[in-house]
Image (cartoon, rainbow, N blue to C red; front, side, top):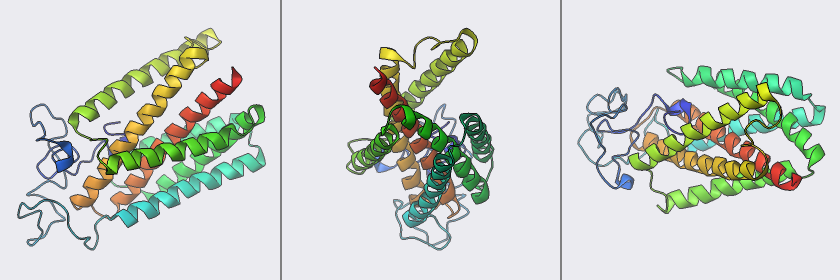
Length: 287
């Protein structure tokens, strides 16, 4: 996941070949050019921006900003596509909950969703049917898992949903008021923490699969609570990175189809946060 989500890993919207607009005013300084793996190949970088026109203020060196132009991504596009994608997840979850989908089938749906997500992440262009199929299978997995946890800890899924909404709103407010400043340092710290987190969870899963029990104990008891909190904090940081990607995509003239990728990335991050909160609430209520 080169940004907060693999969906953005091969895209950047910086005008002067920095990563994802980290040269924009919010970043607080010029982007490093040496050793930056994202410093080349930017399809929206000047002077080779295929979406720019001779009168485009970006071509003349003015700050990005500009009024929406036909065929370019707008915030309305992102909101609408995100609503459609999240709506598909909710419909799938509701169907799995009502039908009491067995956990075995739910895990299968989760694996299918993961494969579809990886396929979309490595595609050069977004595929709305693929993204919506991912959302549908992810919804089936979440619905069945939530139903099973609700049977043991009544109300836990609703608490996780409310918590996810609170994290989203909190990060959005913090980002818009510049309490959170997304720059290259922020990105490096977040991705370093995320890689360490994922590796630890993978090791814990392997020990649990072959040794039984809770593996190394990273997902239960006191350590489970600690790592649950870390997972939620990482999800919040990923949201900030997502918001930056969306902001830069709009500012630097990404094509409208990129709004599907923005919706896909935001959905993946929100699913992450929901699952971490659901696990954390289950641990807290089980103690």
